[in-house]
Image 1 (tube, rainbow, N blue to C red):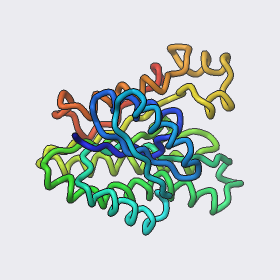
Image 2: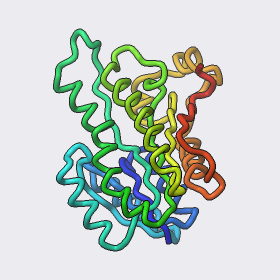
Image 3: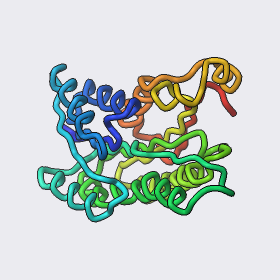
Image 4: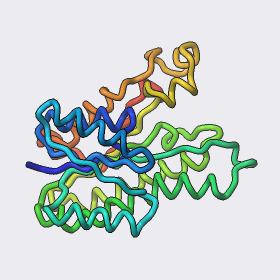
Length: 239
């Protein structure tokens, strides 16, 4: 049974991804940081449905803590599917943005990608098969007012996705990113009302976490073995 690590696996999108991959027969490692009880709930739900799962609790922005947690996980074998979904935003116009706001978002969204991915690469490469999916954002493609820090982190993630895809292609490891637009969930409900969504999104609705999860499910499947280095926009028609 292949093992899949989903960072930020206890949030709206992360939960849907974990549930989708569990249905495909993967063993899920559900990551969380600040709210481990939510990861435990996801694991319990997967197990109740006949799937296999466990939790992993660490701060992706803390390199040493992350390496120690991953080293323990790797003791039982390689992790061949990685979904880098952990992320935060801390919005402000750049003229009023503090250095702490800038650094924390970069630390989690971009440095966190390195901290989690790099230790998993050699074990994954040794199996000559792997799937890495980075969950990005429309902000990394188009920019967004008040999110200079977040947009910079996600745009950096796009460059890293393309470069890493080139490095790993010969080992049958694919690396892709999904850049969702407005996706229904707690954060979206607080930021957008129905009128705003209709105005901003050509399809006039928010996407769903399950729609993100379905795309992840395809990208980590055997059917997507020739697809790598891509930034896939999932945004209801925003161009």
